[in-house]
Length: 529
Image (cartoon, rainbow, N blue to C red; front, side):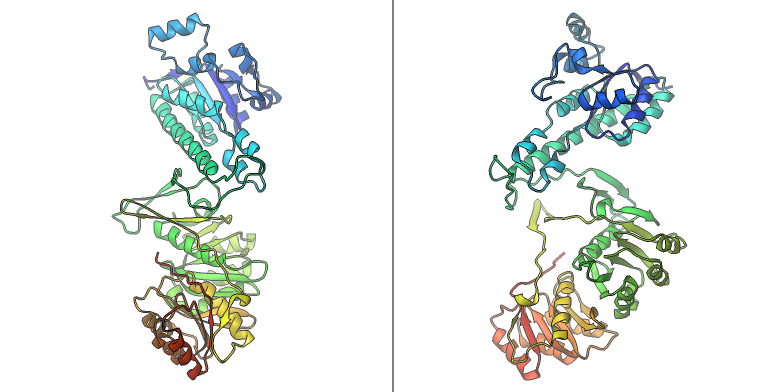
């Protein structure tokens, strides 16, 4: 048995999230640990039939100021902070009738959840700034040599097992682990408060959040898991979460091998692109390889969209990652299962789909809750680059047709489809697409080329389907007419591009000579990485 054990005789419980609370409290009571609690926590414990001592009984002072003051008392913090092996500390607490508290179980007011509610009032945000909770957490974590601080509900089962194995005591190693976790919790909590308050324009009435970039970037994201390695085997890597429970970082893995660093990067690129399409209007499937789409399509069903996406480049699709914007059904799963795919991300799967994919044990299936990521962070040597996420979308009314020939209705739909895809292709980027059977489909993609002409040539070279009658999207303007001429020679009959080059007139003239219809968007979508 470990020699560094400290017995738990009295525990103070004060939690917002009551997940697992009753079972853990029963585990404590089974070791004759006295429960002291506050407000709603004590009510929940009593309703479960547990004997609980009110905090006011411990302190000799009532809760007051609408609960703002209940644990901010010397008999709480003295009970937590005194060093058990320090004779002067022990004498002081005895002189003031302060009872030792050996475990503190606290999770904090859901501040960020409150602050993110639509139309939330400023006073409600302020009332959800926890004071007593973080104070107890810090006190207990500081005195971890004698006190266990529990801030995560996920720790309850492990602690119950350790208490059972050690007759109601915990090891020094466990108390140290809990203390480090506790300080990370309060750091993240304070960072969330600072970030939210910094973005509020006026401290009265409904909270008005300004969208300016923050004065300070605070990134305190807890570890989700360590990964086998990074982009390459000699690099260490891990995944962290922003705590929202949304997005790829918090997606539920339903089956398959452990996710790799590159899987996660590709899945994020996949989901970001497929989210461009409204699932209530169209099923959409994208196939990603090395963060670039090699095929993308919409369809009436997931099966139809998948077949069309695969048709664009079945060679590159081998070993790719799929993003799907709708629930995956059994029919689609049957077809997808014929291809070697590394991972799939979708909002849900039918039981039939899960049953079909179960035979492909290495296939990673992720179920995702969409996340709103307003900003993009990129580390550079010595600091961070921060920008707003590229959420800008255009509609037909936003286009400026600059050529003599107007695009046909079908060309217009294809242009808008190609533009959405091009936004997610590494620049320089050219996307060839078509609109057939009521849906968009890529037919050639030129990604990440140093020259826009090379991107146009590469996209045409990669095309398996015919480019005759296709349209082309360029993520930035054509600096010379040669880019326009290249896509026209490949078979494109209409082009969408930002415009804004000093040689726009030359490019428009070249389009007119070839009978090409061309639309300017007035915006660009560079994607450097």
